[in-house]
Amino acid sequence: MAEGNNSFGKVFALYAVAGGAVAVIRLLTATKSRRHYQLLVSREKPEIVEVHGLFETLLASHLVRILFGLTVITILLPPNPWRHLSTTLLYEVVEALSTVVVANTFYGSICSSETILGSNPLGNLRYNPANDPYYISNLHQPIDEFIASALEDSQFTNIVHIVLESMREDSYPYQEDGLLNQHIVNNMQLVPGGTPIDAQTITPFITSLAEHTLSWHTTWATIPYTHKTMLGCKLSLVTFTNILDWCGMLPVPMDWAVEGTPPAKFYQHCLPQVLRYMSSVTDRSSEVMAGFKNSSKWTTADQWGTTDQWETTHIGSSTGEWDMGNEIIRATGMNSAIFAEQLAEMNGNQPFPSTFGYFDEGHSLS
Amino acid sequence: MHSSDGSRNFPRWTFNHVMLATIRAIHSYLHSFDSVFALGLFTSTIAALVSHKIMVILLHQPLSASGLILTAPCLFVFDLITLLLLYQGMISKFTIFRLSSCLVSLLFMICSAAFASMYVQGNVELNWARSVEVFHHLLSVNL
Image (cartoon, rainbow over all chains, first blue to last red; front, side, top):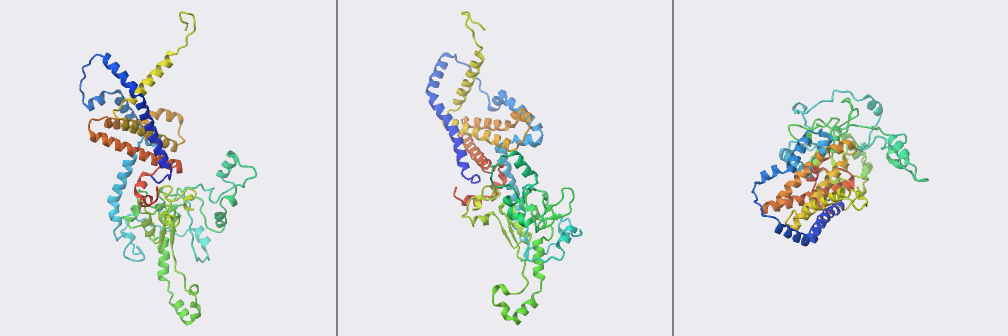
């Protein structure tokens, strides 16, 4: 109900007004009608009324026969889009409720099991692919040549991975020779003397970043769930190589977060877990000893001089509560996961524009 | 087309017939319930269901005009069945059926209004499964 902000109340009031108007008309015409019916009753001859059951009455009705015929035709319609369009509100709500109840019944209790994330504070580092029926290895594949050449002789201090979903390729960063720009220029009346439409005015920040980063214009997801898609996206629509994002492994093309529920064991090690592992095996003894020997290096907190530990954070505007979104991302090994619920704490708990979380120009974040 | 007095007559009978039939149908509908409240609630439910279906169709655009015209009766058939069942419940002599029908009608109005608000605000179809699961934050805000 809160999804459409104030629109819910307005629409509901409109429905109520429609019903109220008809009721008022009925009341206004009631007196006249009563007289009319009284006259009719007095003139009509008494009839012998046969008492039928409800089922017989319904079958005898022409309307029911027509509806039955239409129902048969509807079932024979092509599923998309026509049969899908014929679903009524009742069916949609009941289907959603039953799906969630079934999912919670079968997965909810299992998800709380300790074996998913493991008792290891580093997460499921003890993952054994031999016991995972969902496991499909890609570890035998060599590192992509393009990535290998791009990363050659590079030293990382920070990694920022930016994903924008459900957008046209030519809109982010904005491409002046793209189809979107052509459509705007050809079909929309631009204000004379207005702000020019180019990459510097539409997406200046990401344009400046894109020039110095590895970027992929289009990636393909196998399922329209953001949290599952973050496990892996494809660079090619045809092949199954070059899979990006946290785990480099395509999510199971099934509804709900089945990756985190037995018998699945969450695929394989994901990037945050690799970074965690790198931190855990880094021997900083010599660095610490160097600090002891030269205590002047430790005078301030930012001068420790030891190798930084990888701190991983996933930040998304979608809700983490839905379908184990938070658990899925945390299971990749992220130290922290920030979702719409946490973002809400920063904006005075403004309501989400939708159940998907914060989206649509981010006006609710301000 | 000419009457006995020579004046020209227009074929107004068709228009009058349609008008009379429409008035009779409206009159019949207005007096199809004993309770005025049930009549109002039923009318609101019709508005809610029809609005919902129109919004769903609009969200699935573009659709072929010919396909839309041909399948239009089928697209509304389940809504009609729902309304028929609600009507039977509302005119039932059993209080439990009448009460249940009224509650279901109210539920339809709420769901349709939620769907419509989502359509107005975001131009997207409401994901009911997600609505059921994500509720903590929605309940914590001031509606």
